[in-house]
Length: 86
Image (cartoon, rainbow, N blue to C red):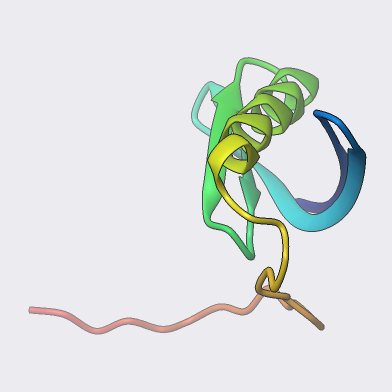
C-alpha cells in the first residue's frame, strides 16, 4: 500500500489547486486508487493508470461539487482489525 498526495487542477475561469490524501493498493490483477476524504476511487492495470484514472474521477467529481469545506483526513494509519463472524 502507498499513501500519496495528488494535486488537482480545476480549469474554468480560475484555476484551483487542491491536494487530497489518497491511497493505492493492488487487488488481484488491478491497482485501486482511492481519495480518502471524498470516498472517490478508480482502478487500473498499473499503479500509474490507477492514479491517472483517480485524477479523472476527481475532475468529474469537482465539476459539480464545491471545493470549500472539504473533509480532511489527518494522521491516517493502516491498522489490522480482527473480525469475528458466524
